[in-house]
Image 1 (cartoon, rainbow, N blue to C red):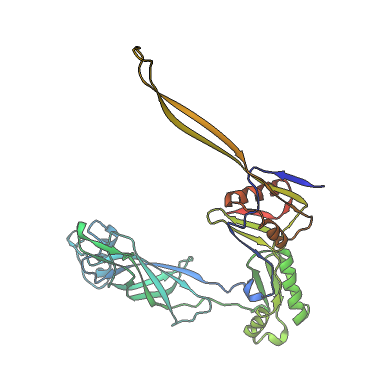
Image 2: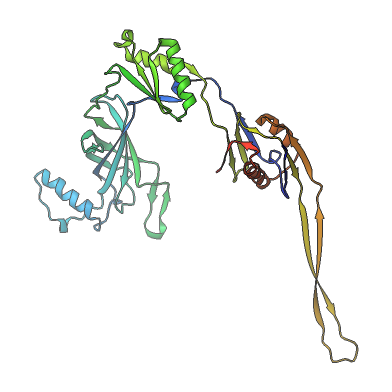
Length: 368
């Protein structure tokens, strides 16, 4: 049965928008899944940056004062917090990412960010700062010269600033002190976590692995595939994982149409299909003109001059363009047929919504 839409503004806009369609292609398992347990961990610590040229925290930053007093006390120096006046020190938070499989003695990058009212931490030195994970254990220790991508010059209203001088980094600024336990394949099994959960893709990955190594893989759910490590690979799990990651597979995607309203870009999946429908593009143009004219009173009368406002309304209906799409039309056929009919980006979105509402397009419509 035909479904006909007659809209005032219509058409799957491609003459004035950017449109693309994507079909699933053969890819590596490595690009759509990862081995569970191979992950990074976030570290965080609190420290002090010293050696600043008067751009550190003010005396109102109590955490810097308290931290400085405690630091000096550890070195046997007792000072009164009220007497401490040091604007070359800044209290900072230090963050880092602990990569998987790092060992003791390896170095990682750290990011240093001011948490007080310091003007800049450029050129300062971060004192030894323990970095802890979410469980509270220390996994690395950071120290070194801070480098920022910005600067502050001048004072008060005569100050120039570039980028953000209150945050910087220390390349290789932290030394790993503790290694995370890596149990990759220790129980004779590994698991693959899919980047996008899908029943069909999980089944295809399972079939590809079983075709290469026998019945060793099992899809536990749409997002995870469990793999038993063959006995001849137990001593070389890395080689086994590398061989699995290189296996080709065709991932499956749901039918989806994504429309970017701001840029007018349309991206369609290659498996988007439509029912038989007729689309008509046309528009009613209404123009209102307002003019003013003057009217004078009769000679020798007591009347006054008046300004009369005239309104002229013109309505014009543009010639509509129609296109008929047969049933089971593929996205490429839709694009080719609709390119012949012009439309604006707003028209395009209206058409897609109308087609979806009428049930003529079998895809998820997402507007970003």
